[in-house]
Length: 463
Image (cartoon, rainbow, N blue to C red; front, top):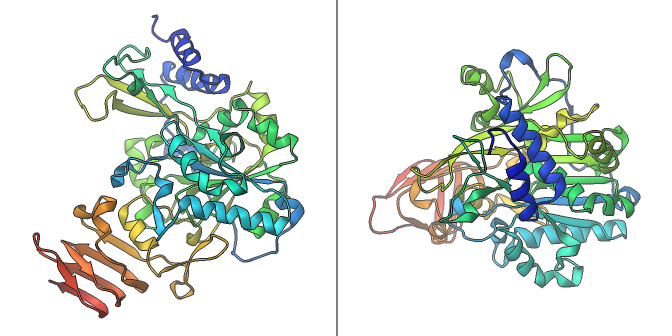
């Protein structure tokens, strides 16, 4: 094929049943690639975001009329492969017999009781997570959560691009590896291409709250819903203050030439500007990946672009078989959901407490979430206990605890008053271990060591 010719991609995607909206979105990014656009956002073109409205949880009462016009969308396309899982991450247990999906369903059921209407839940599944998710949700069939036609928004797949030829890569040894997910920015083509956008609007649903399924801090708040509805904004991004742990995460900024808010990911930052990117005093806010959408205004914006939101391209260089570094070099084109903030005139951002950002990206996150530093309500809300003052415990585990199976024998010490916990080597905490302040435990490799019942405060404890 001629270099830069999209027809081969179009044919391949149509043959695989990819929806037209996703083909259009991929074409937009592929053409940007062929124009040799880098997708980079240099420091010289932006200004720091400042003066944002601050939201405090617990403000406001439910407005049943607003709630009845709202859909909860959870991004549920991730496998927990980095933690040794072969299934969708949202089936990880947070408490015995209770996982992410159980809590999400519990939250939505509570919203339905509060509004007296059937608040919708949509799970944006990937081809890797759909079967596991729907199979598990059979236990919640009574609430109408088991049918794909009622709860599933399917994420698209797009072709990987042969870096040398810019043609669709071919990998006969495993054709499934010729495809990749397009990032959570696929939310927009998936909504319109699946028919869900029109279906929701026809049902009187005007507002969407979107967040990651592994972020149990992201729950629908009455005050936020009221704020968003009254603002008239087409798009609202929840951001929170960056800490040293967030230096590599995407940050909020303002486009210098037009004053629009934008999201800059590290893959969009020129190497020369990395120091500025990581300066948390200059760029103070990061995207929690929780957003609010006005669905009617989203439809209008999509119509302007022929069904496509012009999201900035993110170019990732990989190999077609990610486990074989000698396999064909490819380019994977992705888009970020939050990048749509720049597509909407009048889009806004709001600063929320860190407690609304509690994702489980590692076994250390899961270990903390399973502790008494967090409480789980009957309404499915997962919240830091009051003694934490909104600050989660910092947990550091050595590489031997990288997989979920490795933390199952650790036990569950009390972290309610623990600021920081470091664990190195094979250890087990007995029941009744209370940790306070900053503590570190270490054991030599080999035989498992036991931390006996008691209170351990501010110190290093070798075994």
